[in-house]
Image (cartoon, rainbow, N blue to C red):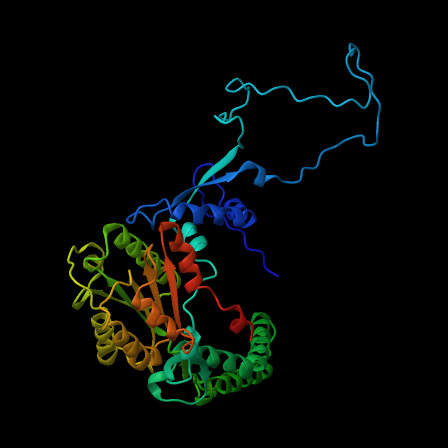
Length: 426
């Protein structure tokens, strides 16, 4: 068992270990504060850190203290007002005259709060916990298997270009030591005996001659052991490993027609920024395709998608047709997990809504892992919603949600991308 001690330097007056322990302990309270804070943020600062406030009553911890224990009766001198069993009334609260450090509430009631800051990474981790792209795993190894070459140890046979010199020399040294160890030990003993005889004043000519012959024979035997043999060669081994084809692309379709007022567009942008942060925080490799549409649809970059002022009438089918064309050109559904998210106020030409349904049903949904439609309006549902709602009964990979105000964005987002615990358990 190994114990790892983290000795990395912490910032002033902070402990990384204690901070992580604190975040785990009060996770539920922090998540509630994060969910409430996101509705108060602007569109541009949604990815920064956050100052979190938790009521102090939620931070209570058990405290161990020494005490004599038991029940004791005490008599305090000077008590001429109370008898045992009397209830002592609470002194009336005087607003603004307390001795504590907290601020008094103007309503006479309140609670102390504990505030601290969390980083951008901690904020996003809490924001997107338990969320995922639905059905992403279903494209792994079921339609297309890709392989990558990986190192797989060593082998005794191979092509010369794959010889591992270091590993081969290690084997050669081990073999030569094993084959000559006893001979070298005997040679060392003979050389010591020869040196002893040569230092002696008496003549040992015959014994010296025999020792020299034995030393020469052993030396020749040791030299005959080859420096490296074919048995020592080790080759780098490579194997082909199957890898999941978990490439994914998200299509973001946003209505920018004249019926979308500035408040509605801001809600749509908030939703898509939240979606972009979720994708970049949770998945390493994913493509995002931005499509804006009014009477005509156009693929744009990230900056134009969020900041362009172009507007016009409404033909929602133009965005779906462009999405279908891009899938045909660049994203083969056998290799890509295809996702889509469409945001609109639902105001569309009456004869165009059935066409939108047809494009989704015939071309997009059969090739998509998941497609979501978000209608942003405070009025009754429009014709586009009514036609899309029919698809929810026949397509499990299609979802529709309704957003009325900014406070609905995050709950709707979590509902659309919540983890399917049933499938994970299976």
